[in-house]
Length: 602
Image (cartoon, rainbow, N blue to C red; front, top):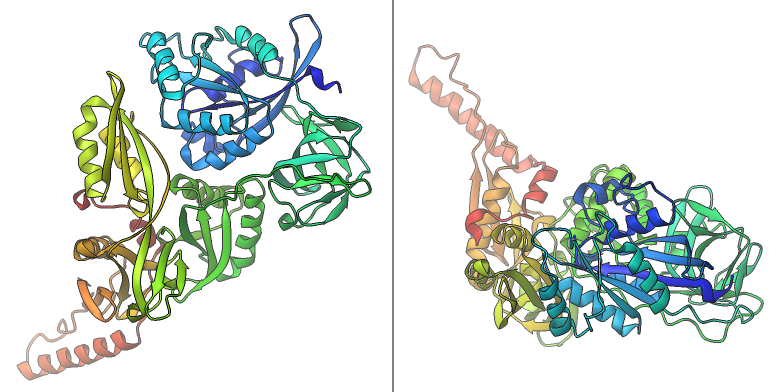
């Protein structure tokens, strides 16, 4: 195919600014769906439709008549907008020459708008600004133009005004894409050079690899090599993406598509790898992606120990099309064998666990989310990176604990400034700056411990701001903080899956709050169960679960009091023995309860 007739671009924006709806209008113009009959067609997962967000980037090829009637191929990728899926956006950007930046005319420039724009600029993409939702009565186009120029630094005078809902301005935007975004460069006669930007698993075809061809051509029957691993395969199918996969004879330089090569092991395909010919390889690989940096870690354990291999297989397949997911085996005395998984954020964790349950039928327990701490040992000075409290050295070996901090940018309505500042201050935030990009909104900049925002911080922010608050953050490094590992003991037995790390000044409050939540879910026994929180050998908090009692005196309707005492003493001895040998079963709800704070915790 002639690369001059190709335009490769992605749609980037803040969450809920209309990316997927705009993609629907493009599909209408290409004749794939009827007008107003499709709603977020590219958001194919049930989770995406239920939550109203894009989780996976979706490539699709659109055939379109150019300005002079010549055929034009638009390779479109609709990307996520939430900060947790930033890595997904960066992968899409690397496969394109241009990006359509969509901005909501009622919300203006928000945190992820800026972050995604900088991603595109760092890859030298041509950016087209599209101001969306101009049909709404509260749309403020002049103010949005001003924000684009002042906050992002792009020229907004030529921004295309569109309404993705009604289709107004969509044809104008397509013309601008044709005229502005450069066609891909690349020589179809050069040695094959393809970038792997995504993949998925097919029961019959094995791993299906999504590629952008930069140089050369890819045919069915070609022998190809993955440059990172050196693995070689024979291509059995080549195609591209419309609403369904379309098989073709060849993919040439500039095109986006896929190939299947009967790859059965998901671990043999790495996102960001370069695919080349095994017989005539290219000299240099395509620059890959920055290494993925998980921000939040949690343990995933099968409820049934026999499902361990099934959970491992499910995680392998999920990692194929979500490279920001990492996992490694671990074991817990309370939960058995499972995996320590790394996620981009708490929403990412929720999405992965729901996909495991829905798509792969896995019944799992999720442990308390943690961040990765840096621990310096006393005497030796050895550095230990611990993403779980169970990996902490003993208390006597620790010289200091360093905690990851983030620089957060919070965009909120001006009337919520006081309440949001109070929330952030209670989460150990350090104020940096406050600005007013326009009269309706304020931008707060804080430095915060990552551990303070990975549980329910975003939910509390949304609640305080009535849904209008947004959060974006980036890692700001490690800092020495007075932290302590708190062990949780149930009936005197430590439960490593419930251990947590707390700020020393807040240990007792955090421990009591956690034990109160735990007490609601641990079932009562025939003996009193003690829930304790301890630092080293020192108990800092305790809650008791009252025992169930059997009325052993019910049959004593008379007689000497010594008979009653004898029965009570016998019951007391039985309960004492039961407490020594009894085991307390902790339900899944108890682990999930740790993820949420009580209203009075803040």
